[in-house]
Image 1 (tube, rainbow, N blue to C red):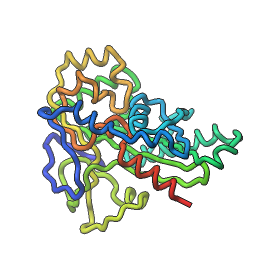
Image 2 (tube, rainbow, N blue to C red):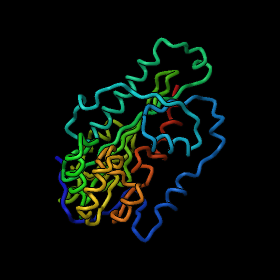
Image 3 (cartoon, rainbow, N blue to C red):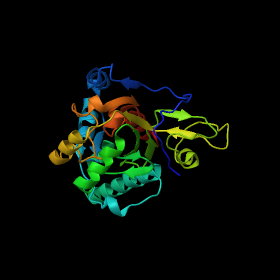
Length: 283
């Protein structure tokens, strides 16, 4: 069961993370995260990004990879899961399957000599215990943003990397923090057993109940006139959760971020790089 309240959590991190406050420079953090090795541009494998997201394309390019873009023709609303961690996993997998079907039957002689890597991912926000996907319209976008005001939200990312040359695939969630509490009355509780059974994380539980803390965003009060303006413009609400958190006009309303900006934008760099290397090494 998901639950949340307005109190900022006090917890002990079992995994390091980075926190951003207003006193820090978001632009500096983003510039630092965009540093990459140009050697990857001559990688002995192809990369297909299964996403139409400009942010994901920019992040992957900044990582140094050359790639082509192919979008999955699926009805995301037809794929439903009760828990956010299960939903993003199911959507990333469905995107991968749809793109593999598109590629099926094409001449793959070159791919046999040069591995092809497919990257798919999905992101949802969780606010007040509710999963927030891309809003259906202005009214839903307004409702989402009003819910963030003076409160917090969680972003749940899942990345799936598939080696199309041998069928190997690796996936994982972006988890800035893992909290080892037996119980917590604050925050958002996720299914530890499901996450651990679906990954190769080495973690031993020390209690009957533990908490995964996904990317967390704490908000200042968001004025009604700003909400109305953003919703009317439209281009800032066409994302999971209904608000482009990296837009310059939104940044002043972000009180604290636990995680990284590439995670906010929908493609965690560190996780994606690790999964790429794992599928390339898989036999």
